[in-house]
Length: 490
Image (tube, rainbow, N blue to C red; front, top):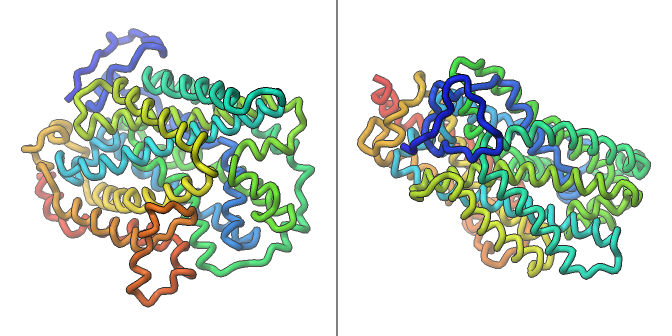
């Protein structure tokens, strides 16, 4: 267990002091706050105008506005409900999400979901920094037309990555303070964007979009769930772990779900209206521009005087999400077994994020193809993990044992082969039923089960069937080792 430097009772520490807590259980004296405090980080992390771009991608499934609205409500709320339920584990165990996962998979067996979690977090923080860099460059090029394109991108890239890495390294208190301030600022400027973009809406054109098959509605729902809530489930307990264990569980679920969902729902529906208002919907000029630069394209409809506030809110929202990701990815590295301090782990992830952003911004032909392929690849294993984790949590009647989470010889054991094997099997099955919307050569093998099953790949391949099966069957896996859980609680 990591050592922890604690403030003396009543002593107030600076938000700029580097957090010493790593993957240890938070001491009773350090648990603070109330469930409503979870609203701030989750709202700030999900108020990004990037959500408006999802409107183009949802309509790209060939569905009507009303079908797309239904997919938005279901995909956003249900996926963030999963985040809220995982947050309950943080309150019950006062440890990071992937440490609590050791109770499910075993202290050493948890290395498998730990690696999956780390890939997901590093991937998402890289995606967010890529978006922030592209958006900043687009706006700066409009304000400064004579500037060199690469120089503008480099400036944007350096500024964004320094903000993200610095906040992730310092830790929890600074993150919570930043998120509280960003929530207010981002909310105000985002409302300004909606008001300025509203004249571009054409409700008649939107309602004339023809409906599509229900499999496409399911596909759009799963795409949103994978891109939103399922991207956060493996870090949900990292922020609720500081709450006192007597905190209301219902309040934790409510504030996490509400804080996470409210902004994306409003912004995605606005995106549906905005893109759908143009002839051809997702195939319109705006829809095509969003594929290359999701946020920068949204700035093209704004007056010049609002570009500075827009880019501040755009980058602020993306950086807010990236900060949460880099903090959690640093914790996950420690959970896997890297023998360093938490801030060192965050710094390592920052270096990987640096390389990944350069690869996409300067060398990839577009953004949307690698992004959609990434969602398809990591969405399945993390879905299997969250299904197994929540099924296990529901069967447990007592809080997690602090010491056993760090001892392979303790009650949780070294490896729970049923959980590990179940996640591996469901990942393979899920990948076999999943086809990425983006075209990436090394992922062409996905969807291989459609070659042997009597299912039409064109109808089911993009429906998110693999993700749904991974979650549902994962939820049932703990029933196979129910006796193990009861023995651990004696």
